[in-house]
Image (cartoon, rainbow, N blue to C red; front, side):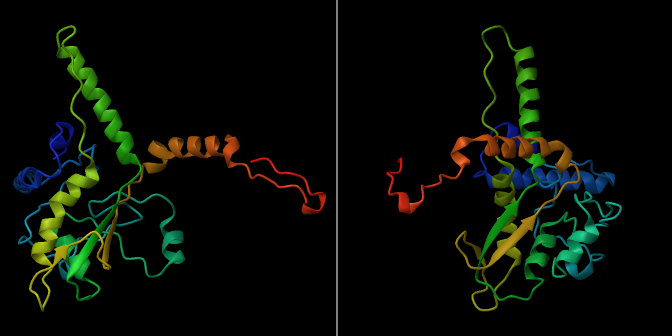
Length: 240
């Protein structure tokens, strides 16, 4: 799927992304192993077929991630797991979904009756860093094989969030059935929000410098300093 992203295949061509995800899932199933894509960190590596389920999964949901050892096929989340769990006992367990039905089961797990839903996706800060690095390598590779004065930059990369939504949303609509209308549809403005938070253990080392630079720049920027007005008893004119 990430090959399509860097080739500039638009997210509107959802069928192409679903086919690519299905081929990857079939190859992983036949070989018994699947290497994690360094560009999307495995986010696009799931089977989009809503009919496929894993009977060994608890309640049809994805296997839980071992936050101490990073097991279950997922990456160990950054920060202290015990501190994060103690801060809020209602935080759902971390899971490693590999089927569209895993996401659908997660959306239905609270037992809500819904007609429409909005999908909210939060990606790790490492994603834009890795996307920029991959694109830079692609540009250098194309420049090396292109004749002089014949080089052209690759097309704009399709954002991971858009490709993921285009691939997952049809599967969620197909599996999340409402008892009254027998159909559930995606609506960005729906009151029911299905939020997905993806984490990666190396976010701090890969993207932390960007956050620090932004904070340092913001603290030095004179526009962030508060303008103090003179005491009102002095009756002095204030500068605009």
